[in-house]
Image (cartoon, protein in one colour):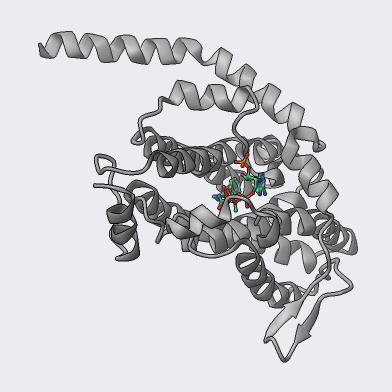
Length: 307
Ligand code: BYC
């Protein structure tokens, strides 16, 4: 196998599996993207975990608990998919702690009210689905199969978030104001989840050539905006973008300019909660060392018994 034959396999829509030959740059690109995705799922547990003990009802608490557990599961699928590329979980976590691996910018914003649980489910999981539906067709088999499972759960997450927003939007004036405030704070960071504009996205060229990404960042961002505007109208909340307008000619919504300075600042580690999120992860990782040691010792004992 060589680069040319590999590309022919990709162009023929054949999946690449762990033991198949692959160019070193393809392997590295996947490790980077899948691990960043896994870290996003796991770090993403923090802003919502913040509200489990303050959920307004037992039903709301149970749903939020289940959702946060789902995110941990998504992280595990993705770390496992990444490990098939010949890198260990320890090394992946080390890259996160050393600041070499990123995670989604969205999780560096604080969750200030219960309505933020609605905004995250509706917008953040909504954006994640738009991105991940296209990743179900990614060229690397384990990543594609992981995405199929993850997308099913994200759909439930999106609906639970939208339900919270809809309930609050038709509640008391104070509740409606909380829902609007959450939308105001989470709208632009959610739009930023899709990454830089295509003209400023160094990874897109190879990602598209190797069919790791199946759609461009801007295309996905537009899809998300197009599908979300109507949902906001139904629950009578206002999207905080004065330039948002249906363009009959394009058959898409036009929208305002994102704050790219803020975007890169958050991506590069200087967002409102970057330090807090990483410190918390490091602390939890250190405190969990005895669990990992116990699991390893148990696995070793089982191996000795088997032999
Ligand atoms: N945040 O050339 P580009 C979830 C980085 S979580 C941070 O366009 P690429 C959930 C990018 O990594 C779902 N970093 O890169 C969990 C690259 O940095 P490096 C998260 C960003 O990779 C809990 C550089 O900027 N989803 O579902 O082609 C609760 C240049 O960018 C961001 C995924 O991770 C950003 N927003 O495209 C609720 C999906 N944007 O590596 C929900 C998988 C860009 O060169 N990932 N960067 O140092 C992807 O699809 C792609 O990685 C991205 C970026 C679209 C994010």
